[in-house]
Length: 426
Image (cartoon, rainbow, N blue to C red; front, side, top):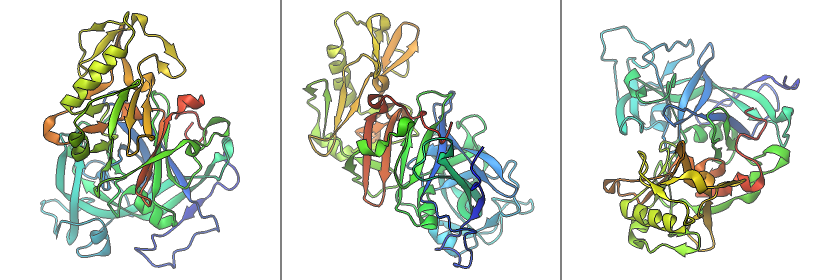
């Protein structure tokens, strides 16, 4: 049961429509949240929004580097408030339209197929990075839950707010292939797009563009995406923003790239190709389940990890997609996860590093076998490292677009809490 202030509020995008559309009260939220949960079949992280008229729940895969929100409009899309963006309109410009024209099917017009409409490019990383250039740009109603100030108990949820003209893209059904069960599209948080989810909310509610993601390690428990201002409150009032350390965003790209200058395993600094680390860069991705390392980097990390394991922990045959696996008989466990060598990603400064403990470096793949939860990437990508979602579990990662920086907390296990240990999404 929510407090008596649980009402429906209406706000307008000031950069799209006039200021005559006013909030019904003086409540002006600065922080929102989405519940996020792992799909066990695909290992993708998904969230759910309410969209359309009448409102229906829409399940979407989370893509931090995605440029927009896109949904399947070909199957089962019904809304009385759906409005396609017309050629040369401001909405088309904001959504970076690549073409404009009439629906080319012989059927009558429908959401995703209208005359005098504009189109942009949407993508699905899970479908071999498939891009589709005929996604119709449109507007419709969308709602999101706000956060009630600094409350951490049952009153922590604020009112649900309604955005009457949220810009999104309509895709055909085929683009949802290889997404999780009942997933109808993707929600993008990319830094360069005027219509990414975080940018549209920040523009509508006048807050600095930032969001923080905290992924649960259990498919049965929700993690959280905070959108907007701090604090990031967990159980017992712990504010995870107090533990953040930052590194710059280094590329002007929809995706998020940072600089990893070196890697340590326990106290040993690996002799890596610094040019490769510098030129390839490190991308952060929720579309990749396990961190991918360029082959030469993977080889050195794997060898160092094995050498730092206790002598009685023996390697065993690999289990796909992993190449480095161990007999679990002598691997203990603590509050920081499995007892394993520490992996340290040293960032732009030697004194700034992200610590990966056993909870994020080892994975139980079958009875009696743990594997190093990193995979060997492909040389052709040109990327040195892609940080995957497993390494982000129970770490809070803040994407501060306004200051062009990314913050990390290290594992919340150090604080005896975890990403599911908050009232907002429980």
